[in-house]
Image 1 (tube, one colour):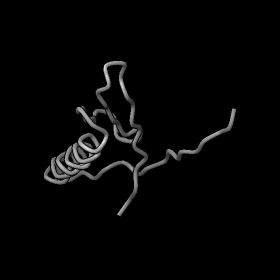
Image 2 (cartoon, rainbow, N blue to C red):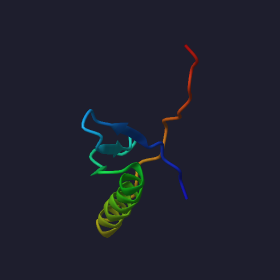
Image 3 (cartoon, helix red, strand yellow):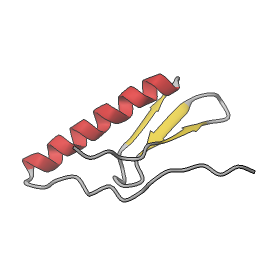
Image 4 (tube, rainbow, N blue to C red):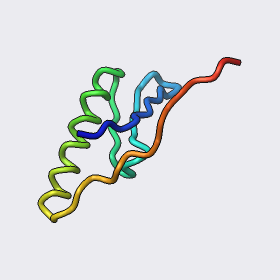
Length: 70
């Protein structure tokens, strides 16, 4: 099982979004970060199932995340 970096972003209106840099097009939107975290897992699972049905697999993850102090 692979692990993918998830980018969570909060909009100015307080809503949340998430995307996977390694899997373009897999996104989730919601009112809370928790809602979006569940949504991105569901979106990735649905995308993986679709790829599997077509005899394909998810791309290998190649992004990593870190932080820097400023």
